[in-house]
Image 1 (tube, one colour):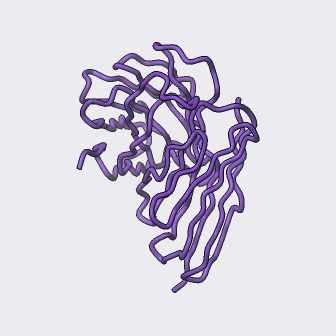
Image 2 (image 1 turned 180 degrees about the vertical axis):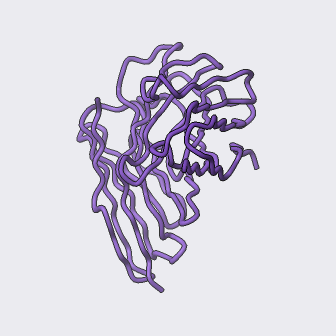
Length: 115
Length: 121
């Protein structure tokens, strides 16, 4: 099955700093999403981004599907950005109307932003 | 705001007891996923449904776990009998599956519930 690796595993930032999180995957994908799990355990969907670039406020994401990686950028980090960031990919099988995809999660990047 | 609702939020039980976890997907979503999260294994896919039909449950221990969708507004995950190694957070997620969205993107955007934290003593 498809392998998903995230780096770095842990990251500590001072408030206001920028950071880049990486997600590498081992095969072609039909779908890639980024999630933030906050300290209370809630998983929030940040981006649905199988290819290209998207921005949402201080966060942006880029997926280069042909090179099998995605990047999540956090600018001007805040303490509320703390938590674990996951990418999830759906393998690149042939789409059928009766089919769906297994979304495989990476092991995450644990981010702590210090005040 | 539309949200995925999971109950109960916390469950403490003794080994051997039956545990039932419930999930109400977002109205209109046609795909439901069950995930289990542990420190050691991370987020593992247990089962998923499209239009209430089970598509894959290969991630579940078949002898003790079962997942069903009695109707479009309810998904259940049962463990019988429960064991201490089942202690974890169980998440339900829903999405609206569509065909080709263009740019090679397919599938659904996932929305997660708050999870059920299960402790089996």
